[in-house]
Length: 449
Image (cartoon, rainbow, N blue to C red; front, side, top):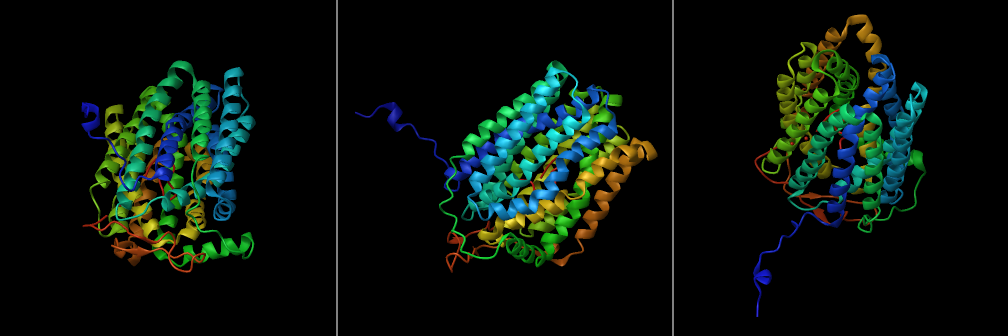
């Protein structure tokens, strides 16, 4: 006898959502939920101890500087060691540094150098995590649904960012920044536990070869030989720097002086997250043929939040601007990941990702450190208009690169790996379809997994 339960249709994962992909998506959801609130908490922890915009910029720069210094090493390590072990170790470091930061804030008034040191440890963990994570994600997806898989991954990540930013801003206002930092530490611990179960057996073993310098040279040849790759990374080296300064320094200052504090600023960031979710939903259906051309056109709205803060517009208008920016940047983000998946050999993914991340964040420490002095010299309004103008200029410039305009989505792409002499993980299929492409926040650029 067959029961009703036996005949009920069962929910099944799509074919492209394998075990690794599912674990990576769940872990990214958890860390995004905690980290978005922690970004707000760190800025207001500095302000609540009597710090000014310059101090906020120094703490933000302290996180990004070690990220820049260690990214290339992190990429080489991730292509040599099992990527999931590198990710777990990095998560452990992030957990410990955020927990210590939380204890300092909850115990009393932390000193600026202490906050900078702990933030720098978090940046060091991110430097080793990011190349390994991007390489692991790109290698976890096969088949013609790759673009859809990346869109769903980013939908989960950005959905968590939406909730994390809004919740983080509210929690900072109600219970203070210390508890938000403690929650972020717990999120890193849980995500690291999930990533410990990732399977790397499908990644071909690296054969004997040169040392780390040889690996870095090989990654550089792969990176520098593709004008579309280094052109867009150069674009985002400037765009991320000015957006990073606006988000980390000018945004909290404008929020404090004109918008009502951490709550409204967290709400605006939450609308940005909602926009990225909407953009990811769009990209599960839209497959632009000229990936990078469509994606780059969608980077122009990245200038709008800085312009809105410069005015400054009412909170409702700022939220609308942030939502639109989130939608368009997610179009770029998914397209960027699809292009990397389509064009870069599997055994070089983490090293290319490291150069991608390095270029994308190299100027962020300088920009955030100079944001305070620039605000003192030119005023917050003029500095924000300068940020908006630079985004427009560099985005227009990268459209002059022919490969950015002409790189197309392919139907079938063979991913060769030296370890097997033929194809890495078999022939990979990139999305076929009418045409097109992802990102968000300070990490708005190419390195955004």
